[in-house]
Length: 168
Image (cartoon, rainbow, N blue to C red; front, side, top):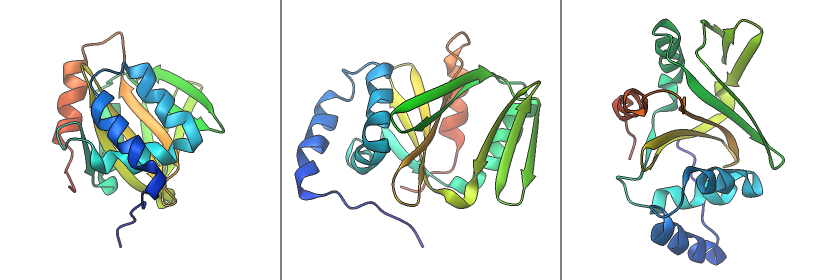
């Protein structure tokens, strides 16, 4: 069963603003949108921006995606958002383990985990040279954002995101 977030009538202005300003905003503005109200409004507008700017992917591929990043030592940013606070780590991951529904990525003393049973939707979003992988829970709240390492060539990251199976 696919979970969808209904856009309240009052959010039509947010959809219009997103459509009009998507290409004008820098990556910081897009990350701020993810932080506002736990990402709920952001999740509501994504289905309504251009299909070339945001598309839903199959969340079931994320374990394989993390494993690919690990085996290729592809450095990337992992941003976890909660309560208006974002915490980020930028590095490759050395190992990926699946513990039940939880994906655990580790590098030295850093770790990153995602409980896939709580991820309802995953979106690839395009912002000039920076593409994001945005994860939302079943209630439409933002869970995490993954991005290219800003010190690396973003073309490889963008091509990886483009290769993920689309649901839209």
